[in-house]
Image: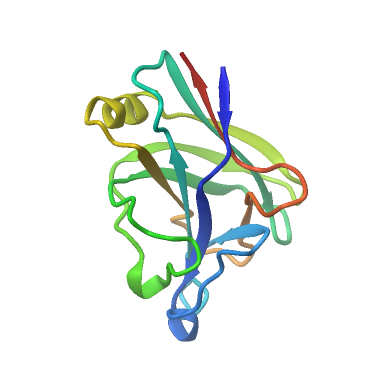
Length: 165
């Protein structure tokens, strides 16, 4: 078993923040909003060079809600464009999200570990000789509290891509 830390993780925000970068933030903010400037999407990438095969791949994310606890959906997507950089990625330059890899209903304002089985996506990337895999995190519902996903810059509860050979 190998636990990989992200080689990059950040979020992007629309509206007047569309050219802003958040690559040093300790949390990715994830939210869909009806008001321009409040929608946010997260992105993570992992360096999988050195792996040629695996038996399983699980993306582990620690997620909390920013305010009043509701049942908020967190979705994880495949992102085929892996050429982005956490220090330069903005809403205006964000890669497209591809296929849905998994979703979970979150609740509570304390960080909780959620795990997503991303085996097929990572295995397909390795077969295609890719050295990096990227994921997008998204909340499709327009809600007041946003989701907070801990990043590699957080003191604890950092994201992990857990690979089993």
